[in-house]
Length: 215
Image 1 (cartoon, rainbow, N blue to C red):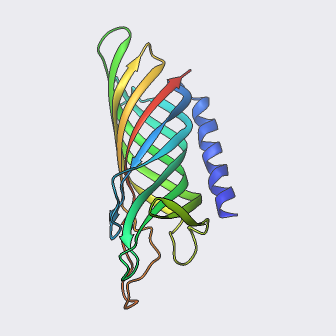
Image 2 (cartoon, rainbow, N blue to C red):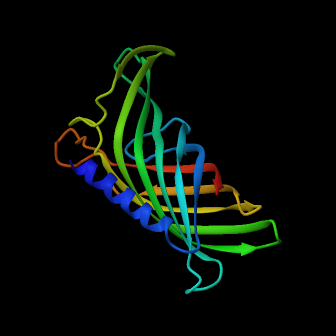
Image 3 (cartoon, one colour):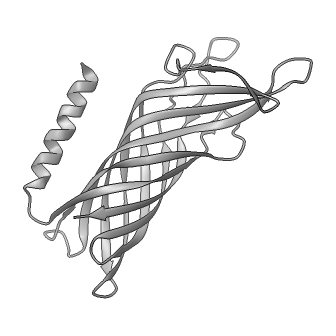
């Protein structure tokens, strides 16, 4: 019920933007490079996909070039992490994939460099709702177990939020290439330490490389 209400609100907001002046909309695709922070110890970065729709609303009342950017994404985050299991010194590796309905809302500024090229930068919050996920476990590069219960009592909280920023280029008023960085502010871990006094800390952090097309 809660997820249905959130999605209905998003659709309503997007529909109202479509009928506004100085509004453009389109599609976005790219990759996330995730490396969370906290008590998890990632082994490098985890690559995940990014797909979605976006809207861009100019705000000339503030200043020429100022705009707000609104996206609805299916965003894959996670990590890969090795750890020692027991006294046999067996090295295990976890590969965690968590898929979110991600909603970044940012304020930006666009600088026109020529008739066909503009630079832009934006910053603002993001909100994430966990949809599904999967954990795969490997021993000496051989898969031995997996689980889809990533949001159970030993896993992650579904709601996430944080701050993000983007810089990029727009070509011919349609094509956009952007590099982004986002950092979670919420601890999404449900795990407790051995004394059951404190939660383990796990906050999302990721870079994004994306291509967009605005109609």
